[in-house]
Length: 512
Image 1 (cartoon, one colour):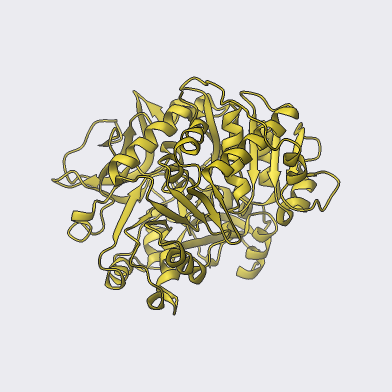
Image 2 (tube, rainbow, N blue to C red; image 1 turned 90 degrees about the vertical axis):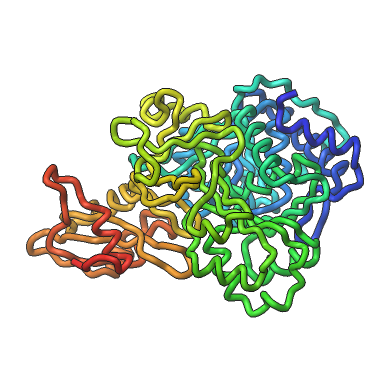
């Protein structure tokens, strides 16, 4: 059976008493997790959730998140994880565009969520805490009525939607990435071949589960092989170190910004981390100095730096252990069953060492953008997904990511589409032109910086523009810096030279 949720039945049968899921304050064995998932699936089914529906999740890293993922898939429904750092208006757009039939949340987000879902046809609304409003029912009360029930996994087709994940885009709105059960199966197989995981592995995840890296690079892939998944509700460097020691974790997923926090922790050398074999990472470039610092503390560690996108279920390449130092700065070789090709603007392959656009082909590449045929056709051409990122391959085939062709920056692992921030700046009456680029940041990797040209005779301060954006954007998208200049640098055809602005922001070019 191709249904991703059916793997729980297998492990519950052969290792029922093994810890499947752990979190601060509780644990589930595989038998208990399967029982919980069946009860959640029965509760959703009773309330009308069927094959083809979309079940939204707006939670931190909780056991209920994992339960709902498997329960939705068990019914043949897709799960739709929401980034809890987005503004409520952005949640509404995704829930509406993604045609969510159900949403499961927690008290932290319930009030804001209630304020924006009025009028949406979401028939199932559950909160894992005591409801703060009358708009939601309590998750445990609903699930308890179905304890002990069995819901057989729907025998879905390989192309059935397993999840719908929204990613920041360079257009006006985020795009829904369609991931099938087949995509997920191939992704998991690739990871198992790459890392050799099995039922003895224990993975700690501190990054948010709405992120494809945290969810898949060690997360539910660990459950797929019968290992143990340990969740940290919200990332905290000291707490994560304690979990690694307590559970003798073998693997951990961390974004580079999280690695920075770990390295700054005064408790780093006080915990026994000898069980840790692998840190999986990606989402933004890991500074080489930070990696060398990490390896000084954990010399036997494999820091598996990766390149990937939501559209490819992440991890298209990994830097292998043997070349972790000699190929420092590379993101490695393609995962099994994936192909990487570097092409020019005409779509022709370039020579070794030449920078071009990174394209990807393989069975885990997404099937398309939800309700957006034009964007799908533009992104997938002749079977190759055009990432919009620029890179090169060396004589050994190792990939180096050089720049972003797409107008995107990554802050703490979060994608931020520059045009989205620029559109808000253009709404300010004093702004004539605006361009947003990444500004280097020791903690987050990079943060948004706005370069602004004011209208003739108009006045505005940096603080005023930052406050203006704060009222209209998620906090992590708000510019941390504002620079005023007389004119934006442009090509002869009139395009803004973002590369020049990025070089200036990084200190590698002249400031204008």
